[in-house]
Length: 218
Image: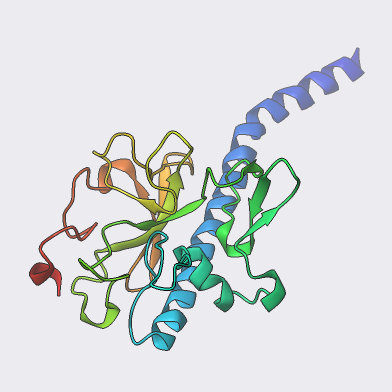
């Protein structure tokens, strides 16, 4: 009888503590995610230093030589400490085309293995591109502390855009996602990373996204 009472007490305590433990575990994952974004911000600074102040372009283009220019992850992987022979931001796991994002490109709150080419844990602001250019010229950007650069995104094969995100009003396009207990982690162009609730993220374009006439933010 006494043993049953002890077991019942343990079960009650476990039921009370489990939500708190789950919340603490998710908070730890969110902190790791924020640190990933901060380090990717540092990698971006190094990239800009090596490329006359230009940010890597959000998506992939075909260059004048007919070869792909690479996505923003492809440009930053060289600054993450990955050996030269392994410089791909995703690790292909099998012949079925499943992969895992590598190191800083892997948000710990995502499910892990995903179909090749259909998903990204982090996306780059699609509006950070000067008309006719391959990216944005970082030294001349105004309001860098208010303008988002990278963030958590949800993206699959049914959405337009892969490595970049659009504002929350763009149905059918990849967008920021609030996967950390209702929070989204984002990195601003000045290098600081934070967690934000949905009401704090503008639905349509303003200085947060930067989709203004170029004269307004340069």
